[in-house]
Image (cartoon, rainbow, N blue to C red; front, side, top):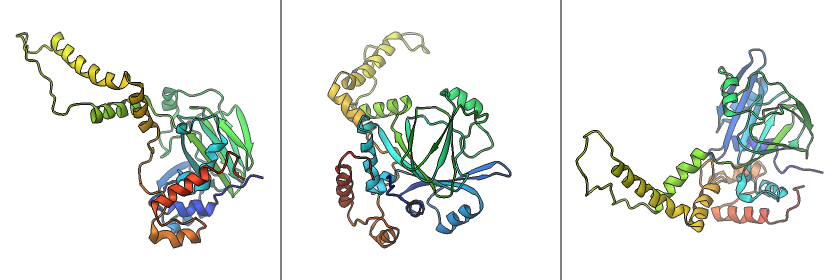
Length: 309
């Protein structure tokens, strides 16, 4: 049967660490108030929130912290590796969830422990439609007027695929619920253009070259002439086409974008030497050098394409 290499205690431990990206969503059923807090958390604060409210704890990039989770990507051999973003794992009390919402990317929801009921609306929601339905009084992005067309109850080992922008809501049906979200990387057009222009500037633009018009002719003082626009266009085309006309250079730029960590909060994903004792007590493997982490992750990813047991 399916066995998840991550426990709730692992997530609680990660949520107290600076090097982990975590958040806690709480919901007061009496007032319908939703709140969001970002880690790292103090252990006693987590315990207090978990004792008195409907809660969900989410930890991003768990695959960078626990190498066995990296093998999950191999369960999807039909997807290029550069398309994977991360494995986010959440844990909730009974009734816990993060409300109805949409994601901008494809996602595989894998039930790691307990049971969660997923409800979805069949029709994708445009960004404009999402903006019209967002609740203004919540600290998280919640949809008003959610009307489910389909419902699924996921047991450990089950998974559900959701295309981009399909409204969905998950609710834990027991107190030991844990769900993994295998998200796919989908850079926005804005992100691609910002990255592309930065790449061109960094690699091809002559920083000592300036706009010049030695053949400037007299004209109306406030007019940007066609000749001036032609010079600007030539500069832009010349530099941009140095990338677009060279397939290898274009691939190099896109490779740097597609493999860049989205959450660049740390360089070394595993706690340093002074935290090793605490990590071992929590059941984590320990490494003393950053290179050992890479070796361990490569070994975990190379152990075969079977679904992790």
